[in-house]
Length: 161
Ligand code: SME
Picture 1 (cartoon, rainbow, N blue to C red):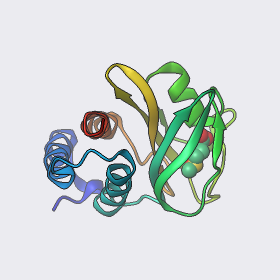
Picture 2 (tube, rainbow, N blue to C red):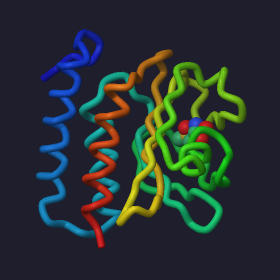
Picture 3 (tube, rainbow, N blue to C red):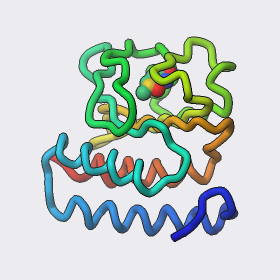
């Protein structure tokens, strides 16, 4: 098992390749969206060090609505365009925030959060939600984490009907 704080970018890419394989195995032909979101949240929370929240929000109309997650209870509805999650779904692209206090409109669900990574989930080309990761460490996530979580989001988006 890799230690995230000591690994370089190449090792991180390999770490995420292994996570992607394991996530695929975890879904194992299961096509239920909520079941797979629940297992993915638990898997990410268990495998990545230094997280205080890991979960999914689903796009419903003009709002993101809380889905399965690990961590403290969180805000249930986030309007598109608000907070880090709302920015990611509006832009249809990942948002990496090294310091949440410096992000205008950041929604603090857990006061311990210092950095955040939000990755959109696409299904058949359509953005249907986001994966949200929070860390109590500043600048916990880098571009290699972003690329790795985008891989997991792709596997998740292809897993359900
Ligand atoms: N911080 C997020 C809200 C969700 S919680 O972190 C779980 C945001 O600004 O969108």
